Image 1 (cartoon, rainbow, N blue to C red):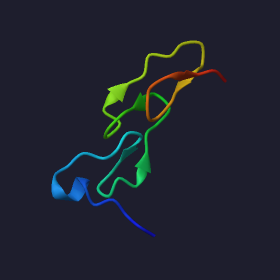
Image 2 (image 1 turned 30 degrees about the vertical axis):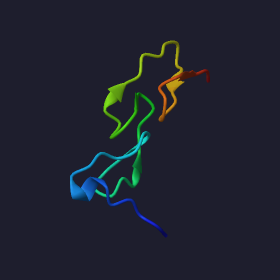
Image 3 (image 1 turned 90 degrees about the vertical axis):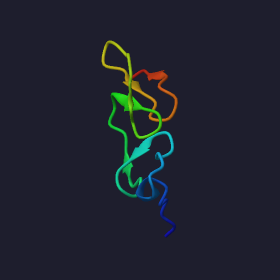
Image 4 (image 1 turned 180 degrees about the horizontal axis):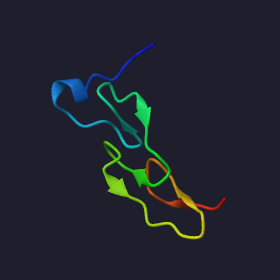
Length: 57
């Protein structure tokens, strides 16, 4: 299993991921590098973890 070590070296995790080894996926309300961006979806929709687009339930 290949792990991203970018975050451990002071970098930023790729879009949709966070954690010391970028091993965790963003929750349904956050997206982008290190899950640092807040999604703005309504009516129970979740945002795509990578690009923030709203996904209808």
